[in-house]
Length: 279
Length: 92
Image (cartoon, rainbow over all chains, first blue to last red; front, top):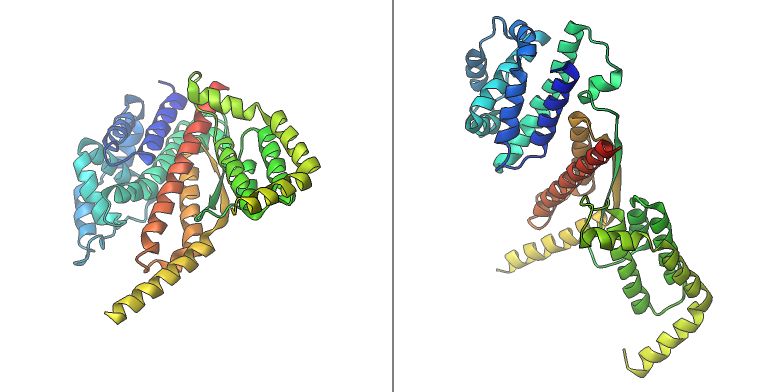
């Protein structure tokens, strides 16, 4: 196996572990340990593990803990090669004994009562940095010529920078800001712009507040859907609905224009209707 | 009894304040979907954003579970977004 391919697979195992739940963490952990044990890596592994005693390291670290759960800390050596070697030995052990991973992470990476939280902490603080440093170590030894991008991401084809907007709607209050946030996240700019224009037109149409809020809530629901990535499946009703939504930017723009032109008349209609029926 | 009720009322008021502070834009994170380290940094950044916004209410019995739920929700969101970006990358 080429080193690019091997490190890409190691990267995939780490990504799977990062996203794993309590029921699923064992498989990527075992896979990672298997990949690290690949014959192509034997010579580097032997160099890293030389003279190290994992049990002694763990026993010494266990001595740091008090009576409180999760108060133990790992006593890493100063030598970076030894750190990498101990981490490698540890991951091998965790891969062979996934149940021990629970105990170990609870002891040294305690992150609340949920077991998976400690496994995630172990993954984030130990396994992910290890995978990065291990690759750097091996590639430095092999002097493999790869681009600096490959060095950071496991030999993937290209870097994929992804934006993720965090906004919280904790009440039923609909706001233009929420809608704007949602449409900005939309992968389809045409539908995003059309929905934003529609929301503006509704807000400025002078409609009774209740009606305006109701309509904006509906736009918000559409904006939420449009902000999601297209469904992965090529066929199916969900994909068809999503496609229908994003292909209707022109239709939505026409509704916005109508609202702008006839907003005052519409507002009058709603006011009359509301007062007539006591709404 | 009254003391307990007062406390409950105070906690509810505090929870309402926390929810008001949480409403709206929290922030944006950027990450490389192929890089576990970059994804981890993004997850930690979101966690910090939430703590900065309402972390001071963490001892409130109503707010504490919401903090955890939000962190979990956005963690899942980042991982999902990263997985989608990787799939898109494979298609290209």
